[in-house]
Image (tube, rainbow, N blue to C red):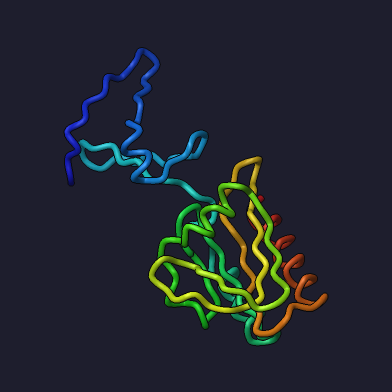
Length: 174
């Protein structure tokens, strides 16, 4: 394990402060949940996201939507793409683009009806597509993004499909 050389004191309530430099590198924001694990004599902190622990039913739903409606969905956690339609499977596990991070940080919803440039992660090329992005919020906490990508201009049926998927995710994350 890589040592950082930083030493912090544990207070009377058992708390320690994660140094700002480490929080910045790991993109841990104020009030964000952190998962605590123990391995031998080490404490391991990981960013926590409810979306990282999905089951096969969510994967199957996204694949069926792609097959039936010819629309692609992507699901992100707080920093990476965790689930994607077959067309975008190579992006799973990749860090989100600065644009998507900005949408997430600002808890925005973005609707682009006509094809415009979209950068999903810093390693991929920009794609010119219509899309909808919605920030997923659970119990007041931001947990990720839901992204619908179309082929041509988006229509009312696409918006209804996106609303259906959003409602499903809300129930799924309860």
